[in-house]
Image 1 (cartoon, rainbow, N blue to C red):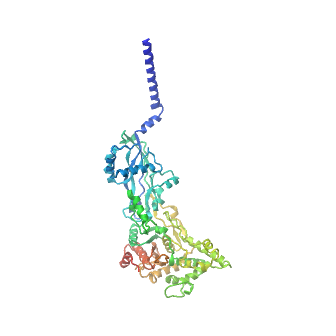
Image 2 (cartoon, rainbow, N blue to C red):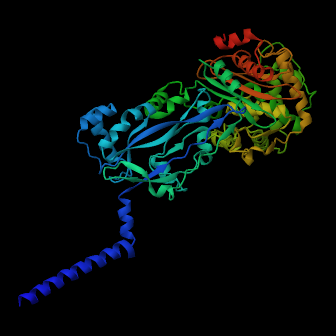
Image 3 (cartoon, rainbow, N blue to C red):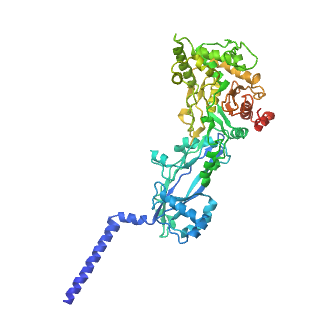
Length: 602
């Protein structure tokens, strides 16, 4: 009886053991799911962020590169701190700051207690070296290396733009599926426009860790790793020497400088003043510095070359002349009396031909010229005739890149304003005619242009009728090229022969007219036009556009200096110095340079 009982108990034990062995075999050999879960407990997935593409000037000088920084990450469910005070001392923070940060993490969108979150951003290499040996004592905390942008020359802040952590809105709108919470993305300028090229592709490395979370090595010798792919480098169109010089000239002023190579549309220099050091918007102090710049009353974050809108003033008379010649309503010999009963003027002159009218900037001449463009008697009804004429004129303006976005490779460009009949119909209930809009004749009234558009206008005149869309990037990647849209030749519809008189007149402006005192450069044929831009909010703005040399143009430039008075002063001096620096390689007119740097233009 006892032997039978022992046999039964032994058989039961053997059966149970067999069942356990069978189940273990199934778990470990037949079913790989449990094997995978087991391995997951000793494998740490580390995302590897690619190096962002760097940016060079047109001569190969590095103007934007990557600097390593380190984010301290935390998985809150795993975070175990035997001594929180000691941990805070290691990090150089207070206990209150620690608690506030942990609480903030739990409130963030997309927070997960089992996924890494950023506890402390952008630690320097020195700070990382200070804490790395202590992290082994604090489970749940780890380091994630990445890079931030760095700028060795501190120029072009608005044009280059900046990168920052992607926000909730951008993340929700991302259709590529590339970005995750905490990723960096180009926010403005070139960084934003060329984001798909600059960002590269992230990779993944699998690491083995022990029970304390300490990394012991690569999983399977890295066989399953996915390597990151660095972003593509950009070669910009910018001439670093010219950019630095133009920024120096604009120091302490408010306004813009834009210089373009007419033959290609490549931007040689682009200045928004006041500017700021782009290094301010990198690293751990990004938020504090961004807030400081936002509160600055001179709005240095405002990208004036492409966003500011001014009346073009007398520079606009060049366009009026060209349209009138193309339409055949005047010839180069056409003369108009300087009838100041029609519109005010300046200086002693009268009965000029077209070339002379440009040189002396005769307002009544262009009043009469604009009237002939608008009223071509295409309808016996003067209101209808004016509407037809304004539509015709506005179409020409758009072909000159005015009142439309040129398409520069930066976000935020403004189109400016070229008023259409619909605008005046709305304001005057359809009852308007030439006498209502005559201020457009001299570049005033409702007209609004950007400094970029006026630099492009100078390039159009330099090219005798066409332009290439202004752009900041010369090539993308190794042996790359510019985007196709920046190779397209844009025509204005004005025949090249009509430009000669305008070009000759612009040369006369510099040689004998309002530009002779500060824009004339010995040994160089400079063509330019001044503008004293009316400003209802204070002192007039100073404007000037130019190109040189006359018959083989290498540079076209436009300058606006706010509240600086006559165009023949501040803007003419700065623009001509930019031309001199680029074409001759040095400044010989040191008295003009001193005048421009001093900034006292009255």
